[in-house]
Length: 113
Image 1 (spheres, one colour):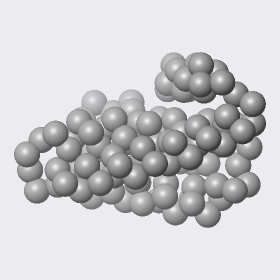
Image 2 (image 1 turned 180 degrees about the horizontal axis):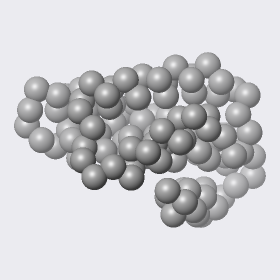
Image 3 (image 1 turned 180 degrees about the vertical axis):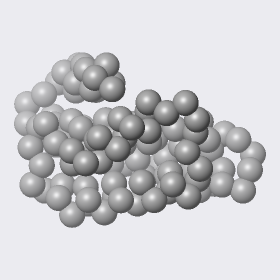
């Protein structure tokens, strides 16, 4: 999880947009890692995973709004991210967090990058 989070921080500090292939590679790595470890995650990892999906989702929405050869792929990425974020929300709520606490955690992670 920390490797994915550090890579996301690196991407967020860049001045230019990464190409579609690199975006897709990172997204697929996120799906693979989180998909295989999800059941073991506790609060901190769930919060980081949710944050990663929120950033990917917002970027995919923005890129998907462009009319190019990858717009449909970005829209599908956005939908998958939204599903994962919902799953993270559910798990975090089951751990006793309110939606306000989840949103505050997301804001805290954003401020840290």
